[in-house]
Image (cartoon, rainbow, N blue to C red; front, side, top):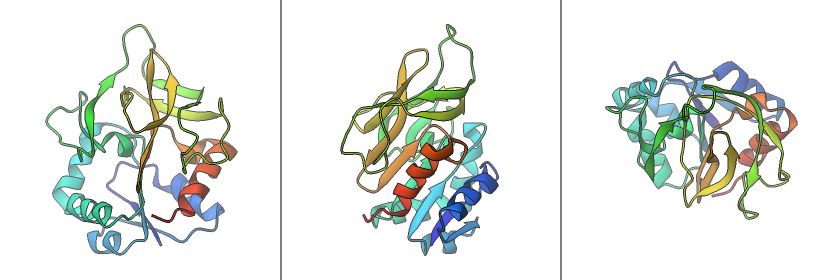
Length: 199
């Protein structure tokens, strides 16, 4: 069972519909006990980084950290991916999971923000399990004002006001800055790959 975590900031209906289309067993839940029992966890996110504070206050943060330590596959989408870092300039007082170093930053003034629409992926790692079957230059759908910097765990980047992480991946941890549930066949393939993971 895949737990889609509800913290009142995710594009939950579209994410669930995408997994339903793939035939995956999912539950949308804000119950830490249900999340703790999940075989995989998805953390969607839309809007302001401060919304993730609800995860800190509900007990979900501790449950997800425990699951990550138990090697449960974890996928962060958009703000959910940003929360995997230590912090964001968007809400400096809200702490992320600090799974990787770095801080999310706003796009430079030289480009329009938010970054909304289709953009292509520059795949940096042929060993990515999440991007298996995804060709270089594949287009996915973005909508965000803040970005994750390029990291050692970046497996695909995107160019907009400079390069930023579009996909991060290490062991049982996965993050995508774009919305796979809105990214057509490419997005569905990425979610299908996540469904098939064994960590």
